Length: 304
Ligand code: FO1
Ligand code: CA
Image (cartoon, rainbow, N blue to C red):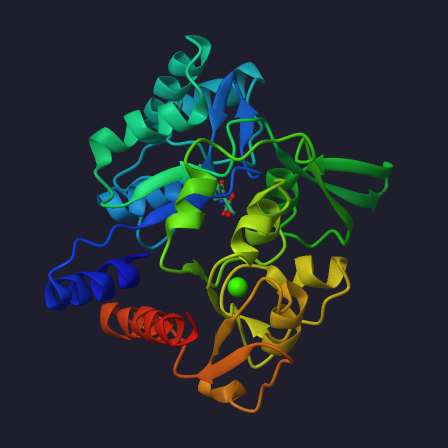
């Protein structure tokens, strides 16, 4: 997102046009803990673009402390495997208070962004409650656990039998989501988890259909058969998709995806019906990151 802002900023200055970015965030990772609704993906985008993120960690707040969490764990109302920091908890209190007053998540997100000024319009994929649950087998037998328990507590090491997007079938895209897709010059699929991040967003009825009507360019999260970060391989194998740049593009499919950026190490990749370009895909620094975004913009302009 930072790379895209830089690349679009340079473009906008050239074209003298004020391009705006809308981010549609996954809310399937959201979890209710100690009565607070925690929205990791929305908060990560908001903190990252707003300058409040813990840079080394990639989630949570910088200069964080964990006093409230310690107390809640002692009361037995917070699991000890989830790191909720004091500064972060303030965000969740604001969110819980607004939601209790009847505001939808999209309005809450807008209010939180009033403070953080991320420089993008940040929309949850839906205002309805959708949660990714993971079906696992362990000593307790076959059961479904919340995505965060699987991801954070088990480090995605318990083999996932299935991902269930609870509530997705009846969820509606949040206000502005379909409109933003329809009005967009193009949709950029970031190198996020194809299953539990982008896959979850695509599970909200109407979003995939809206995207099929426009130009979509994706950045591969897989380089040389391995995820660049995160545990996407554990998610892909659960749904029977090989961990490769080609297989992920084929999984999205040519109805959805028009262009696909892969790393130079995968320059031999070809996918039927999808325009593939290779370039260095490691986000080493702001320059390499904005170069990836610039390549995505260029490819989208060609494919429009
Ligand atoms: N990730 C961890 O690996 N451990 C944590 O304790 C943890 C806490 C946490 C709290 C708030 C938040 O917004 C994110 C948090 N994350 C934590 C990240 C999160 O679990 C995942 O990385 C995302 O949901 C996956 O997109
Ligand atoms: Ca298309």
